[in-house]
Image (cartoon, rainbow, N blue to C red; front, side, top):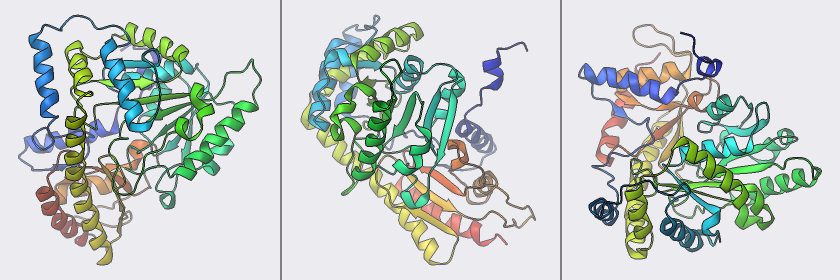
Amino acid sequence: MHASNLAHNLHGSEIIKIAGEINELKKKGEQIANLTIGDFDSSIFPIPEKLQQLIIKAYEAHQTNYPPADGVLELRESVSSFLKASFELEYSTQEIIISGGSRPLIYAIYLALVNEGEKVVFPSPSWNNNHYCDLLRAEAVIVPTQPENNFMPTAADLRPHLKGAALLSLCSPLNPTGTMFLKEDLEAICDLVIEENQSRSKSEKPLYILYDQIYSQITFGAHEHFNPVSLRPELRDYVLFVDGSSKCFAATGVRVGWGFGPAPIINYMKAIIGHMGAWSPKPEQVAMSQFLQEDEAVATYLTAFKQKIQKSLDTLYQGFIRLKEKGFAVDAIEPMGAIYLTLKVDYAGKTTPEGKLLETSTDINFYLIKEAQVAFVPFSAFGTDDKTNWFRASLGASTVEEIEQMLPRIEAALSRLK
């Protein structure tokens, strides 16, 4: 087929490939605990009942025509108030844009700020930055991170790579790890960006930060979410935020995301999203604008939701720590935020009962799918090499009981390796 060079060179999602394999096994009658997709089972984690009622009401009121390209004004007003209440961030409606979830926002930021061949710096592991660089034919500068830093990038990691870069893409809480920036670590990175921009002439493009905080409402215990603008207000003109309802309200299919940042860049994004037609549906926007004003309903939902997802994360975390204490070559990082747990299953070089050598993290993953009926995502799907035996477990579609049942299966499967 005579497709474009871009189409030929674009890599498919590794997560979707794994999900495809799982679906094939399910067709054959296999029962697989699928901890791969960053989504929710709506029977376990439904959207807020009040939000659902408001969506239905908006459809009944025939709010079904095109929304404004930057989003319904009432929703942008509600988001502005929500940001002020949640983070003490002050952004006007002209500095806020609504889209069909967070993906169009990320893509629009890339399109608005990055030219072909320009450098985009991002940590590994991270979600989808490599694919957006492929789409723009930008130069992807992938910065490895370390488990001792909870796989979060440090200023020391990033410093050698910022000279001349157009964009620094960061996320906290991080997909795929569920870990977060400490205040002092994010401050040090902010200072690096300020230093880099001060070194550039007025005719040069500044270094911008894409700051994905879609999981910012989902934090646990003493772990606190921080953002660049609150820590360093002088960065306000250089930070583009990605946020929305998809994760904090378990509303992935509702498709209401919001971005915010300096008005000139938001205006470019408005045109880009308009040409893509990547609007959020108007009924959902109208409903979300009303729901965000329901302070008690929002707080009640978030409290119950966070307790439920944390219990699932803690159950799997404690299970892996017990396996580690028994001498298994596994580990886990304490859940801090988001819906993910970072797991280590260090069994490369081992042989299955059938005599197959497990050489890569992908091999380990498919062994667990077959023998333990549980599927994770290797960090190789997020930019690491396939010798890195760390994995993402997504807990949005599993009950605590299912997690408790899968742990003995994992132990038995690992025990059979030689």
